[in-house]
Amino acid sequence: MCRHIGWLGAPRSVAALVLDPSQGLLVQSYAPRRQKHGLMNADGWGAGFFDDGVPRRWRSDKPLWGDASFASVAAALRSGCVVAAVRSATIGMPIEPSASAPFTDGQWLLSHNGIVNRAVLPLTGVAESTVDSAVLAALIFSRGLDALGSTIAEVGALDANARLNILAANGSRMLATTWGDTLSMLRLPDGVVLASEPYDDDPGWTDIPDRHLVDVSDSRVELTPLKGSV
Image 1: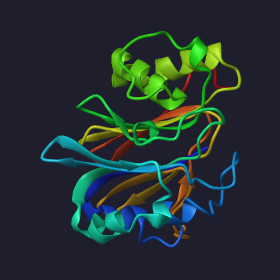
Image 2: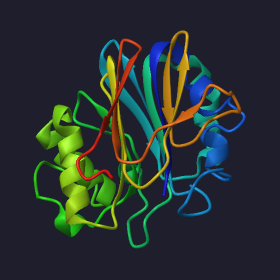
Image 3: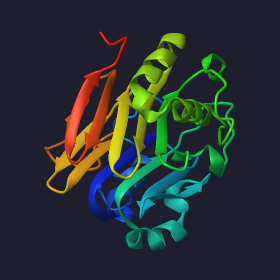
């Protein structure tokens, strides 16, 4: 149901995070190792980064492996904060560029790895697409990212089948939730990686427990259990 990755730290190229790793998002688009739902992520992709505090995005409804234009420039796109994702569309949901993460409110970039019943979501904010992830993103933006943990716990209580792994960043802070799917973290000397699954076999990767909030800022990492966790 999608894979995503976030980076907060010293400037790196988007290619170094998305395309170059041996098991990065490019490989995860057709051969994910830890994906529990779906076999591949061929229904679009998106890469977002911050440029002097301004969020920039490149999104597509095509498979990541077939986009030669992105591959040709990704090495030149550098940022200290990156959010990228590949998409496996929920059955019945449209496949269009606006349905691919990351979504934005002009300050944050946000990706949703999972599924949620749109009928349980309060109608707040303006969604970029009709897909469940975009509607959920609009709700999160309307509540504010400081309330991310409580918003996810509320939605999880309304939809027992929801999977609500969120990854969001604003250039100086990165937040993530685990709720029904995998998330791993790699702490490096110059920054922190959060990813649906490790992009290589570095032994430093650690798995984040389910139903937790992760808060990364200035290389500090805080984990907080979410309401409703066991």
